[in-house]
Length: 57
Image 1 (cartoon, rainbow, N blue to C red):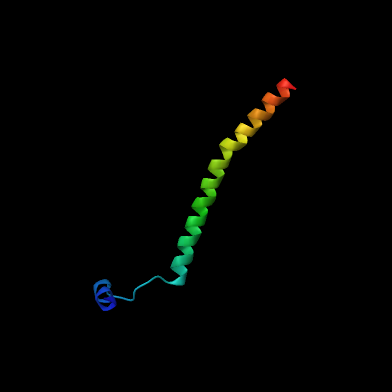
Image 2 (spheres, rainbow, N blue to C red):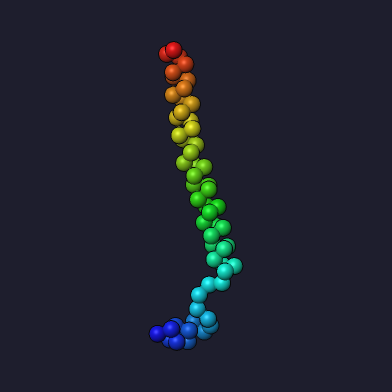
């Protein structure tokens, strides 16, 4: 089975360590952006609650 895949692809199978590290870097960058985007509304909501509590108390 592997021989058929190698013959079809025309080269060695798999990814190099460098390619895997680049993919990991891109994924981690996208996750960090997503976390920042998700944190922004919760931060704004906490500030709004704090302002409302200041008005009451």
